[in-house]
Amino acid sequence: MTDVLRASASPAVDDGPRTPDAAAPGTAPAAPAAGSGATAPRGTGTGAGTGADPAAAADEGTDGGVGDEVREAVHAVCRAAQVASRRLRTATGATKDAALRAAAAALVAATDRVVAANAEDLGRAERDGVSPYLRDRLRLDAGRIEDIAGAMADVVALADPVGEVVRGSTLPNGLRVRQVRRPLGVVGVVYEARPNVTVDAVALALKSGNAVVLRGGSAAAATNAVVVEVLRESLVASGLPADLVSTIDAHGREGVRALLRARGLVDVVVPRGGADLIRTVVETATVPTIETGTGNCHVYVDAAADLDEALAVCLNAKVQRPGVCNSAETVLVHRDVAEEFVPALASAMAEAGVVLHGDTTTQELAVGVPVRPATDEDWAAEYLSLDLAVRVVDDLDQALEHIDTWSSRHTEAICTTDTRAAERFVAEVDAAAVAVNASTRFTDGAQLGLGAEIGISTQKLHARGPMGLTELTTTTWVVTGDGHVRT
Image 1 (cartoon, rainbow, N blue to C red):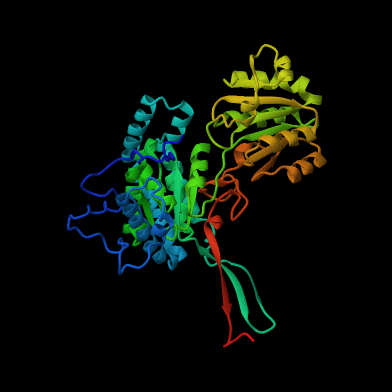
Image 2 (cartoon, rainbow, N blue to C red):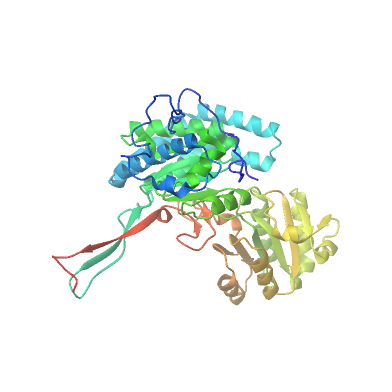
């Protein structure tokens, strides 16, 4: 189970950093103890005279493992984010772009601080036995910080979706009707040991006019604390509210449960991480959630494939970065080319350090390369490691059947020179992205020209695939008349 959120009837143990006497940057002060005589910050109360608290109402009748103090502290963060988002709603594109440029520069200037904090997180991860692939996700160095800041600056060049007219017309009665893009408001992002997500989420949220509340998990706690502090300082220097970027890491697992139930204060939550995290967020949240699914991605090598090209695609899809969701986990090979392709695939993968798990035919054809017998667990696996399942299939129909059974609906690829086979594959595969003669690794916001991404949605409502700026907006119908009344 993920370190970010564990469903439990008993009170959760807070795994986030605590600041006993002062709130962490972007967090609300702890609620005063009963009978202390202290006064809660303005707007944080839920008693008489303050109006109904929609998030408290969502929790009514269930404690959800969240104490009152943590709930109030998290709700205070969300209210502050709401206020900040209203200011950003009317900001010009030039103002938002200038703030993004300044934030990117501030990150680069703070490289030494960020790397030092990241080293603390990496040391803890190594002591805790975290796998090298997951530690790679966590790692930041000067080069990666430059890249992350560059991706943030790249968002400046993207078209601002806010105010875009999706469609419009003048009706026969003279009413002028337009559907216009507007910010969502407050976006919660729950993720694991991936500090790059902190920056990506902030860049996309700001450009699309949203405030963002972050929960990055204990594995990247030190890194995220410094990054959020740098970004908040930069926002203030740019004349924007610091509360456009907030973190609830200090409130641990109780805090994330409070965030997920802050309906009316948070407009949408996006989970980004492993299967356990995503499933738990989706099952726990009363706030609307966009599900970013796991990546059990397949590459199908068709009978009409260019085998040299297919081998390069398979290697790239598996080996380039095995610990990410768009890496390939299974290769399916058409029986007509298996005798030639499987030995070449097995040899190349073994040379790259990949452990193979295969069906009986694969085991027989992979001469000189050990292949572990594949089970249903392998076909279902998102390995996120240098492991690969391989199966020989009779034809395209059997490949499609296998994918339909085991796919996580993330990204599926076909290697073929047969246009009809490619068209069938594209039409019949149910996935957020489909690649033809290309690596699954291209399912990425930056690679698809979207700039940074806040996640890759595998659900079908509101957004599907890499979620860039447009996916962080909603729409408003603007109806303009000249004293029109309905008859």
